[in-house]
Length: 333
Figure 1 (tube, rainbow, N blue to C red):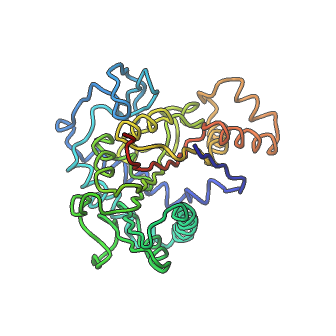
Figure 2: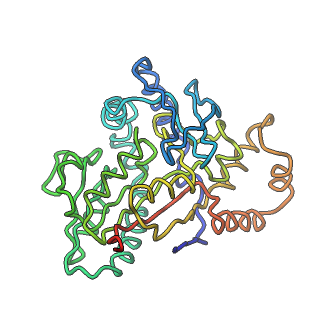
């Protein structure tokens, strides 16, 4: 199984510009509390590995989260309905802010960087495929940059499913993954959307049906097994209830994909911000929940030591930014 790490530096401010991010946090909480929680559903199994030994973990803004005893995935429980999640991601005050010109302008450089990085990643994966023409579907993208970039590369036919903040819809879009024929796609990409799937199991099984034999599912997601979330738990400043219904662990993602029939080709946690996030939180909060040993390290050791710790987290699958690739291979007879 392949694993990658990155040594390029990135600043937390690049990912979460303070002013616009604070506006988004407020809009997200407002949107979450606008939902009728009497419609929420309590689940008795882990949404990743489906183990039935789960227990309360913590709450974020009065939204309870549970943890799986087996794979250690963390997830909101009770959970909103698919209709409620669709409203949040497409029509809520948070969605409207995200679609605004102000927000798009502030985040444009980050979105452009992400499109370049993801295009390079996907292109490197496509080199392993023997097909003369590749069909690729990007699920719920925040913009068209990735599909536009890939569409310029022959021979790739790129399509978006249920894109957010793109109007009017073009010939490169379809409304639902159900509208894509079973067994017709070579590559499915799902960037940062597993976090808000009401049923990750159903979602991953659906992607498996849509892929042709030899096809690949490419995923990025926020991992609950990551250092910043494990240390800060409910105090993690970048966790928002309706943005992060699922915080699946490395083990949870592995079980989720293999149980659906995928062969895991890559699982990596090339995140670069875990140590920064914890260090920033500690500096800004006197009564922080950080264990003394970690607090001592962050306070008494320099930036070089902090970078070494982040490299260690990447290498040992302990960052909270996770990426995975699964392939749909022929079963041996």
